[in-house]
Length: 252
Image 1 (cartoon, rainbow, N blue to C red):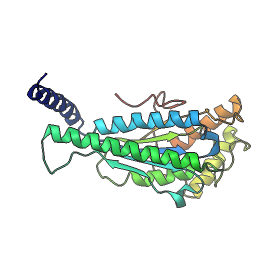
Image 2 (cartoon, rainbow, N blue to C red; image 1 turned 180 degrees about the vertical axis):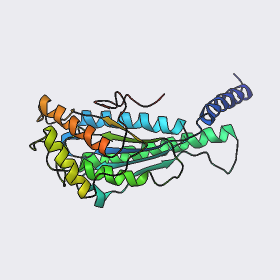
Image 3 (tube, helix red, strand yellow; image 1 turned 90 degrees about the vertical axis):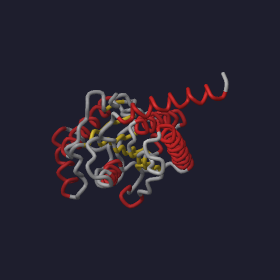
Image 4 (cartoon, one colour; image 1 turned 180 degrees about the horizontal axis):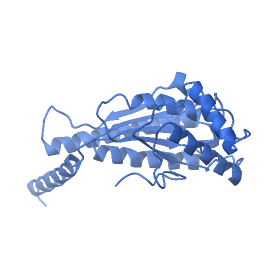
């Protein structure tokens, strides 16, 4: 294959991908929260979370969306740094140039992957002794207001969902009966910790999968009931398959 033929083939592939992207009339905003606690810090679990975050990066890139990711550690409202932040909106320096847009997307995808790897390296080096997922969700909710007019908003939580720390309490030991869950949500709302997540789709990746093995199945189910009630109180949508051990419910 000579150079000219190779170039034309590359340009054709780029044009095809660009046309596919142009069919997405409402680019998404996706926010990923990574549990940085010791219960999720095993190499095997961290590798799974990183692999699923890469899937999310690719999904957002293909749709010219906006991606954020941060660590859900202790006191997340005060410590949020958003170490992953990439806007895949096509550049304007060479408008309507499919080849340029594909190169731009490839570069930004690499940037997002590098930022993600650095974030996970920091978590491995300094795992947290608490997991304040509720505060992290509140901090994440603020990021959805960055871009107006967005119809697709996704919150991806990579965690075993065992909250321990902060106002929400300790899910290893707290009463998580149905009545107790409702009381918790009332208390969280009074504390300003039930954000407005209307029009946000929540996807949980890692539910019930902890490296320490301390959580029995009955409590795992009670924890799931809490989060379903909490996200419903916030107005969010949990689609079928959206609460589970792996990230499987991203729209096609």
